[in-house]
Image 1 (cartoon, rainbow, N blue to C red):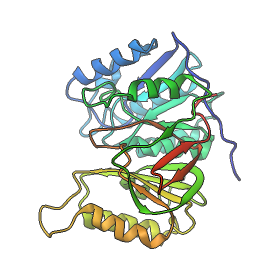
Image 2 (tube, rainbow, N blue to C red):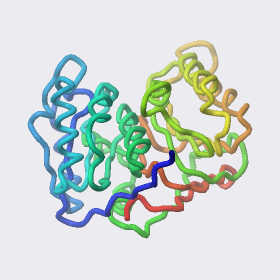
Image 3 (cartoon, helix red, strand yellow):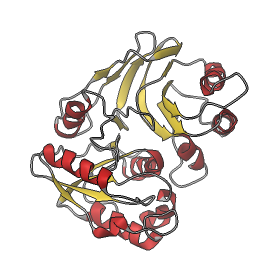
Length: 309
C-alpha cells in the first residue's frame, strides 16, 4: 500500500536542528565546529549530545546508544530538523529498533548522505517523508562547498515555494530524453544492501540517483548487475548519476565511467551523468521523494515540488 508523501514543515529562524551520529565515529571536532557554525549562521539553534563523540570500533557508540539518540530526536517535537554527523557504517543496524517504534507525530527535515542513504530509504518507505540528500555536519560549510550551495540549501530548508531548476556545465548526456518521476536513491552500495530488507528501495516509475566512493569498476558492475537481476532497473523513468569519487582503476586502460555508461545505456531511459552530488568535492543538496522533471539533452533537473511545506 502506498504511503502519502509528507513534506516536513519549513524551518524558521530560531528553530532547533539536532545533530545525531547513527553511523561511524569521528576522530576530531574541527569539521563539526564548522558545521555547527554554518547552521548557526543560517539562524538555527543547534543541539547535540556529547554521546556523538563515542566510538565503538567502526561505530559511533553501540547500537542501543545510537538508536536511542535517533529515536529521541525523531519523537521530540521541539526538534525541527535532524542532520547526520557523518557517514561510514552503522545505520542498517538501527532498522530493527526503528521498526518497533511508533510513527512520529509529524515529519521533520532529515539531511545526510553516504551510509545515511539507509535512513532516507527507511523514512520514505515507512513514513512517506521527503528527506534531504546533502552534507553531513562534518562537511557542512566546508571550504570545498561551491558558491551558491549555501543560499540554495537555505531555500530548500525554509521556502515552500522553492522549486529550483539545476543545471551544471559538467553534466553529461548519456542517453537523451525527458523523464518525469519521483526522485529516489543515494549511495549505490547502500542501495544494493537494501535489497531484501524492510527498507528495500522502490524504483518503479521513478528517477534513480546513484553515487559512490572508492568502489572499483568491477564492484560497480556487480552492484548494477544485482539491481538489474532484482528487478530494480526494469521500470525506471530515468537515471541521474552523481560523482563516483576515487572509483577509477589504477590499470587496465578503462574507467568507472566506461563501465557505468555501457551498463546503464542498455536500459534505454534518459540518463544524465556527473551531477555534482555525493562523495566528491561538490555535494549539492536536493530532496528525495519529490517529483522532478529531468531533461538529459538540455542537461537540467527541475524540481516540481518543494522540500518543505
